[in-house]
Length: 150
Image 1 (cartoon, rainbow, N blue to C red):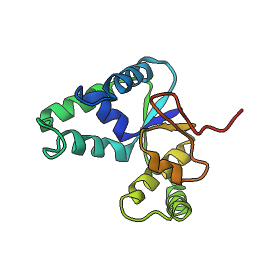
Image 2 (image 1 turned 30 degrees about the horizontal axis):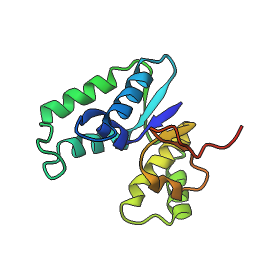
Image 3 (image 1 turned 135 degrees about the horizontal axis):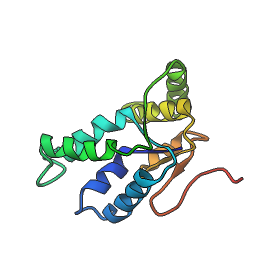
Image 4 (image 1 turned 90 degrees about the horizontal axis):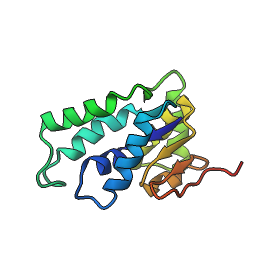
């Protein structure tokens, strides 16, 4: 199962962004495939926050437009929302310590922890900060990755 980061969701929904087509295509591919894919629960709220932010986009999505976009994403029958479970607390503190996460990087540590707990094989992201988490597999829209060789 591959998990999808907030930035990919935003790129997929904002046509003026350079990575829009790649993100949109990849998101549609995941949503229409029979195999499971996931979104960390933290990314859902962050997606709505970003696409509706008036300092980031002109015009920003309204709350109604943002919720409609989210509803379209959540309709995928193969989508799983990743929620913290019993191992989350330990995995979060492990991720924070290994990346020496402070400030905004703590948010990424939450994503790492919930993905690890759920057994996600990788995170689809354009955020290079995830490289600060040793052994955490990521893939990019351009096909690049830090996946271990098989």
